Length: 518
Ligand code: XMP
Image 1 (cartoon, rainbow, N blue to C red):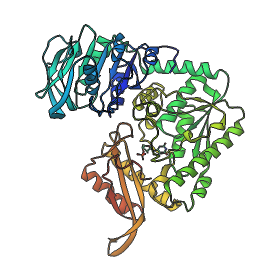
Image 2 (cartoon, rainbow, N blue to C red):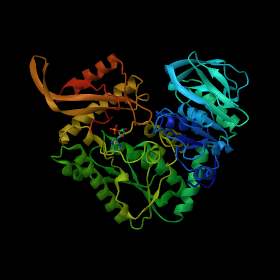
Image 3 (cartoon, rainbow, N blue to C red):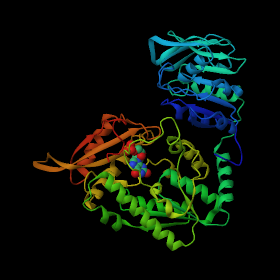
Image 4 (cartoon, rainbow, N blue to C red):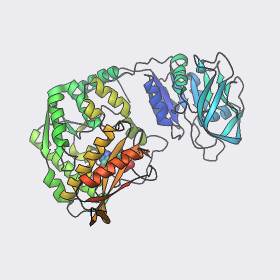
């Protein structure tokens, strides 16, 4: 990716670890720019970025597996800058440089206690001699290549190594995960003290750089931005607004599938608190009309995608000459298509936002968040004075409540779900759990069950509560909401929402479940 103001860069080569994105996020938290590339990225490509350091990620393979991912060229060619191998990444380095790795007699997995056995290792500078670490390896280093010394160990194995003369470092534990509480200090020692990378990747610098890039690209032409009320599109619009002001035209479509009061509240924020040039498009009957009788989730998504495009095109043509389209694409979407796990995968759900726009719309794209993780987007949003209500909102899917009403989408179903959604949100907020939960919402099930209220038999609908914790929505765990809070929500749902007589709690993580039910 080209940028006008180059930042000192750390490159992470991805060997397939589930933690690779976390390594990048930690390094960015330190304020140093870094990017993830597939393990087989050609040397010439890597050198173009003039990295100050390279990190070889972990991975699920054993270095001796037939299909183990290997660096495509000689790993020694990477030694023009300091190298840190993490777990598999180090084992690969070790074998390549003449050492040995063997299957461990006792697999180290989970919490471990690390003891630093030398006093002056740069990786552990300023850290205590003992610390908790997170381990996840079946192989371990048994013979070090010439020039290396062990610098830290657990009870089961030597777990950190260095060759100071060549600036090569290795750990078999995972400094990037939260279960290694001092891991960020180890990574900081690597990127700042060993690689001498300048920590200039700050929200203010990102904004300044993006604003300059957008101005340079747009000049005096006009830009269009479809807002969803979510963090990404709003921060993208705020950035473009800072860059080109009234040359940006935003639209916010009322699909009829938003939450209670959401359209009015959000458009009010856009207009009056962010001063965006925004028009609200009322397309409720259009959306609901075309969903009538549709029960298949993918068909719902397709129809909603098409309606968005219609609304968008109508608005664009009434605005006249528009050259650019703003999209809130984030870095995880970009690396998904590049990294180890990339490549064709089966369609689980076709996500429809502006991303579903046909290519023949003939707009040039402006994607000012393409290099950012979600937490960075929130941070620059704060710097741009995007209101906290938007920054802290739970993600909400483009197809809205349509994918939370299983089966046919009716106005009654939408009203019922809106009332349930408000109760769940209020209760989580008053229990202080809203911000620590990634998403929490009701799902309306297409079945009725028997209940009893007062002296009467009832035969009414079931609401499932879905609440998850997650870092990025790609994997998630069901939220351990205290029973008392769930009890309170359930009482309120059954007594306040007409048509509901039963509440269930979804205890499926992702995978194997997805966050939304459709
Ligand atoms: P799933 O259900 O695939 O959702 O586990 C992962 C995250 O994506 C959101 N989601 C969507 N977001 N358009 C969106 O903008 C969509 O079509 C869509 N479907 C799911 C979901 O809410 C969760 O945060």
